[in-house]
Image (cartoon, rainbow, N blue to C red):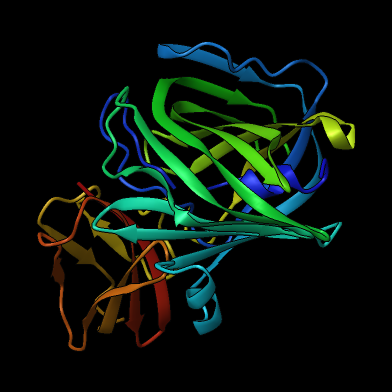
Length: 336
């Protein structure tokens, strides 16, 4: 259980600007992270405004990749209501875990989580993360319940999940291969406390505390940690395990102001009502699609155009896939 639980609880891109709301929960598709250790203690105990976190003694031990997909028909039967499946895959070990979630009108819930030999199914009572946009320092608490499978053991669990955007400030991270990071972030904290039942009630407990640090300018998930304490006295288990991951890159993490070979820009960004497309006149637009960050298509435009109305979209991160005579180009934008 020691090697499996942290991956089970590693969740996911949230957007914040100081004290402005968190607009979205999910990470950018195809985000690559460095799995890291630290030569000094990583102190995350403080919460509040204008903090400084110096995570500058990190060393990479592996990399992981976030990919998203729609649930299969079988997964929808087993995990009702699921709208998105996140798969986290490690490069060196090949280990993978999955997080199943439900997003309806901005309310995000966990429906299931699984890794090698371990499964939590929240079918009895989904774990509500919160309704997004999620305001700074506005807590959310929800009861959770379901079934678990661990190797040959099958039982039930119940407990609580508590979520809050509890801090913001400056995060500093040393170079892990893609350059050092120093920037303004907002932090999301998630705490789960579960009671396990296997043949007898309350045979054990699981406490999980996760922190997620999101860039205040573009919403990129920069750093995430998960600490899990498992106590099952009858099995002689009393373990605490921590996993830390630092963002490396994503195909969607390029700044929209960066000049590309076709000089396509989205203006303004962030946008409230209409986003204008600036493009070389010799590279006309043929059509475009807009998707949310879980990959669901929101809008399709099958004609030449120079602007897109986004006034009806909810606040959050969206991806514009713009098809031109020179190819398809992907641009990320924030709807305020």
